[in-house]
Length: 308
Image (cartoon, rainbow, N blue to C red; front, side, top):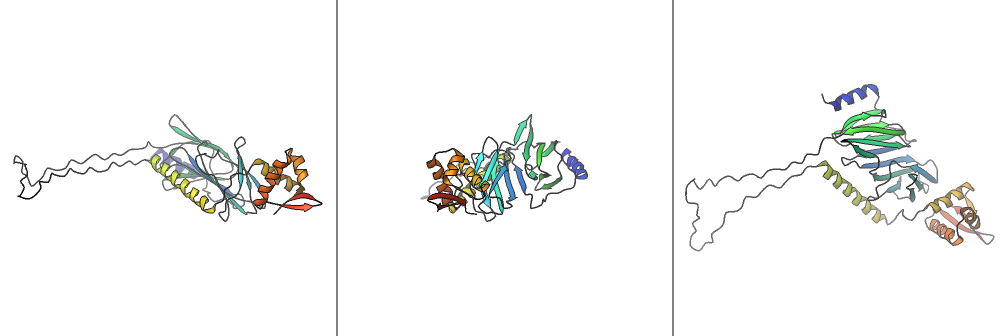
C-alpha cells in the first residue's frame, strides 16, 4: 500500500469530511496546478454592505485578469492594495460576491517538495494537483477526500500549511516504426522498377513517421490557464464594462459619505480628504456616472449623497 493511501486512511479516521460550509460564511476554493500556480475563487455574501474589504490569498498574478462579479455575473469596481493584500469592492447593492483570480505566491518548492502556505479569512476547500501525495500536514484539515485523482482538503478559516510531492513529469516519445520490406519483391531479386511504354516511373513513397506525442501535465496546465484567460477576456469585452479606474480616493469618498449618514457637501469632502477641489470633483463625477452617488444642489452648494 502506498504512502499516499496510508495518509488518506489515517486522516479519514481522525477527521470527519466536511466540504460544505454555511452560505452565510462564504468559502474559498483553491486549486493548485502542477506548475505551482493556483486558481482562487471567493464566494461570499454581502449582507447589505456597500463596501467590502477582502483579505486576499496571495497577490493576483498580473499576467491574468482579476474578475469581481455579483450574483448576476455583472462586474463590480474594485481596487487592490499590493502592500496590505486587501481588495476593496464596491458592491452596488449586490447580495453575493465572486472574486476569481490566479496567484503564484502561495506555493514554494524546497528540495523537491512543494509547500502551500497562506492564511484565509474564510473556510477553504483546497484541491492538490492530480497524483500529488501529501508529505507533511502542519494544519490539520477538517475534511479530506479525493476527486478526479486529486486530494481535496477542507480547512476552517485561518492559516493553511501543508506539504506535498508529485511524480515527475513523464515525456513519452514514440519511436518511428521501421517499415517492412516490400513483400512483392523477394530477397536477392532485381529491385529496379520496369515501366511500360508511355508511363512515368514512380518512386517508392517514403514511409510516414508517426507524430511525436508529448504528454505533460505542465503543458496541459498552461493550455488550461491560457484558455480560461482568453474566455474571461472575451466575456469582459462583450460586456464593455471594466473595473479599472476605481481608486482608493473613490473608496474614501464612499466611506466618508457612509460614515456621515449617507451624504456630505462637496466642500466637506474636500476638507476631510485634504485634496484639491478639482481632484475631488473629478472623482465625484466618476462615481456619479457609475451610479454610486447623486449630486444635488442645496443652498447653492453641491451636496453629494449615496444613491443606495
